Amino acid sequence: MTKFSDLKLGPKVQKAIDEAGYETPTPIQAQAIPAALEGRDVLGIAQTGTGKTASFTLPMITQLARGRAKARMPRSLVLAPTRELAAQVAENFDTYAKHVKLTKALLIGGVSFKEQDQLIDKGVDVLIATPGRLLDHFERGKLLLTDVKIMVVDEADRMLDMGFIPDIERIFSLVPFTRQTLFFSATMAPEIERITNTFLSNPHRVEVARQATASETIDQGVLMFRASRRDRQASEKRNALRALIDAEGDGLTNAIVFCNRKTDVDIVAKSLKKYGYDAAPIHGDLDQSQRTRTLDGFRAGELRILVASDVAARGLDVPSVSHVFNFDVPSHAEDYIHRIGRTGRAGRAGKAITICQTSDERNLDDVERLLEKQIARLADPTGSAPASTDAPEIADPAEAEAKPARNRSRSSRSRSRSTPADTTVAAPGPAESADPAPTPPEPEARPAPEQHDRRPPSGGRGGGSRGRGQNDQVIGMGDHLPGFIEKSFEERMSS
Image 1: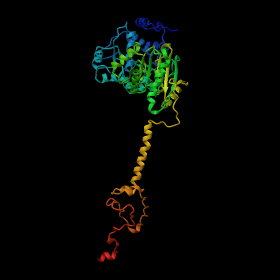
Image 2: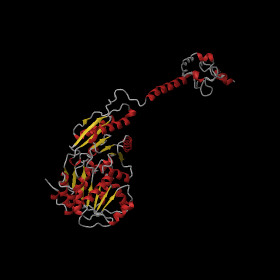
Image 3: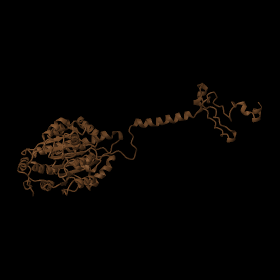
Image 4: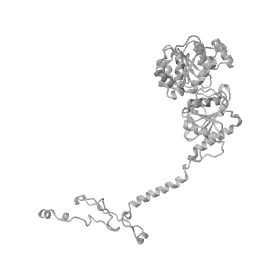
């Protein structure tokens, strides 16, 4: 079996590895590190939790041990999709480069530009950044990328999901053509394959597992959730989550709960805290200092449940996560792999439980198609039977009663408009009110065209039917026919 001592890493790097307690590299490390040390481009494809970060940090430290960085011109560049992943890469450099004099800078959002500018001005050997913040510094004229010798793109498929591919392509155009490129991803989408074909030169391809596979050490299950009523769906779903957490008992040491929307992250976290669970949220809208405190507390074991959006689904290395709960089925099947990959790391056993409501069943089908197997169905821990799907759901009984009333009201108003009794000015007397409203007579047929009838019928805008009794009938043109019309043409001319 290959050991780290067989990979020809620098002696100072090997010393740091020994102090960290590692002896045997993971499959992707064993294959990627020798090729990177030779200066070749590397395309690494492996599921999350397989040690991709060390696959590029260790050879980079060995290669950068000699030389010195110039002001505003970093010697290497590592691109990460999220702040948390970028910070974790920086921690890896701190661990493995503690015996090597290398300088580094972390360019992420939520941190002052001034502090980052001061680090860049001194010159850095390793620049770790998110694409947006890196381009911000470049456009401000504070950064030059013409001296980059090693470029790393980590979690490339997540870059694609977050819309960073145009930024990645622009950054590639800013670094020297002679750079060495290390490209890592858990999945290989067509768009990512196009980029690798464009920007990598004869890469050494390392694929240690079938694309988008989950670790065999993870026990997976799904709860097919059905609410009793539509207006209770959200609260009953949170109740089901709490029941699932309780059902795990002492086996649940800590857990990550994933939600698709940031608003749901806050709501679920508040709900868990309200019922006495030790939980805290983390998502992209929170302040960076708050996100850092929350993650540090979770890593240190001070926080039991982390409620997160997909910002925490990639690359966060917390080895001892016992459970992952998908409060929502992710809309992209690949995200399911990354979410549950937070547990069962480094050969440990883990458990992943997903709550699937009716609207998520299509996404669940995509996940099972990607896994090439069906996820085990779980019994409802709340003990409640699912609501019948045959009868239509009603949001509120009061609303059901109100709707016919409104319909009756509209229909009665429409009928009342068509009744002549409503058009009378005088209020009916006592005797009249006791009788039913008279039925209006059917109107006569419209006069033939040869009668030259072009006047509107009486009761129009001018006089209307307000002056007539209810039983009066308008026959022909009525009594108001002007006399001159009754005269013949000869009589009118003679007069």
